[in-house]
Amino acid sequence: MNQSHYEWLKSQIPILIDKKIISSDTAQNILKHYDIEQEENDDKFNRIVTFIGVIFIGLGLLLVLAYNWDNLTRASRLSIAVGLLFISQIAMFLGIVYNKLTNTYKESLAAFQSLMIGASISLVGQNYEIALHLDTVLLIWMFLILPLAYLTRTVSPAILYSILNMIWLIDNFSTPQAISVWLFIILLIPIYRHFDKNMIISSTPLAWLIVINSLAAFILTFEKYFSDLMMQCLTLFFCFLFVIGSHLEVKTAVSRRPLTTIGVFGLITSCYSLIFSICWQNVPQNFTNPVWSIILILSILSLGFSYKLFQVSSNLLTKLLLASPIIIITACLLAVFTMQEIYSVSLASIYLLAIGLLLMEKGFRQANSALLNMGMLLVSFLVTAKFFDSTISFWNRGIAFIIIGFIFILINFQMIRQKKNIEGKTSFSSKTK
Image 1 (cartoon, one colour):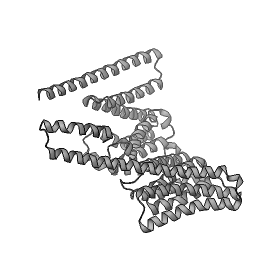
Image 2 (cartoon, rainbow, N blue to C red; image 1 turned 135 degrees about the vertical axis):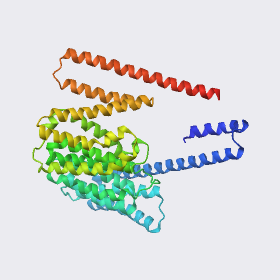
Image 3 (cartoon, rainbow, N blue to C red; image 1 turned 180 degrees about the vertical axis):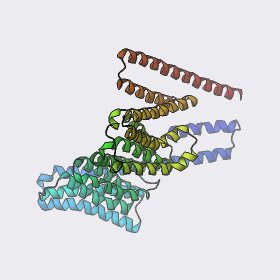
Image 4 (tube, rainbow, N blue to C red; image 1 turned 60 degrees about the vertical axis):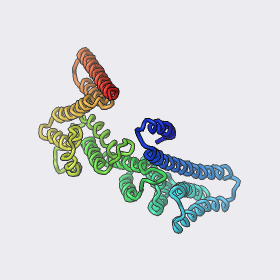
């Protein structure tokens, strides 16, 4: 509860007591509860400000050092670069040994030390004129701050490690060693489960970075080695992320569910690419091709983890999303046995149309304009893609688009009327009470 809401609650308490809706004891308990919550929010804000302050101090020291760099001797440069790193390391070590550091200062010192490690690498290399390529600097920096995340159980070194990992992957995307990015991601995953809710920095950004890094590594791998059915495998990978996220992510906010959010968005987006025949022209006819093994493994993993969700869930839309591996395998087999793309394209189009219609139905039933508009957007994208992918004349396309536009507007108006009727009935019943 923010400050304005808390002040409003305090102003309403005497009115509720006068009307004998609540007792004085109940009023005191309510105010005490939200007063404690307000203190926790203030404390969290103070911790964040402290963390930002330490980061600015570290960056300021680096700027001052850079300004006076030419006036310093080689020994002075080395002493300053190593000294800053040594001081932060000693402070962190003593705090951990004697257990005197709060989460705020532990996180701040870890962030400061991570920056000093990178600065020391660059300064020492420049001081002794050591020719270091960007990928070498990134690797050294990554593997020096990764133990810091494990030893101190702080989020900031892990977040910086993930960012450096992404930069390294972009810099080495076309090189053979880029495939080793999977190892760098795996090294980070075990520390994630040690983070708790009281961290000064939320571990949610780290979760997003891990998922994005994994997605980039997956795209890299298939672009290099399994490009024949890349979009089909990518769709299965997104389905796997969605299934894993449905099991692990129990928080309701979209920003706190990277696996589910990226999984659903990526699943629908990649399915759109499958409605074009170009994605089905190079399907391997030989089942001994390694890409078939990848498709089979991803499908088994997705279906295996989604079996319980499929039984428990009563939402038809969720079940349809979970069934995407069956759709993909069926479409691939149709492309192999019929040797024509039209059947696979039609199946992918029907699947997307069903998702869009279910979203529209759910939004209309719940009077939820966001879901309704999302469903209409999916259907309109599908219809537009199919029209421009066909040989229908521009006259017929124009008439069809006008009709579809009027249908969408009428549905939206009807939903708005339904929403107003529901609100009117609610207000009427509250007045009669």
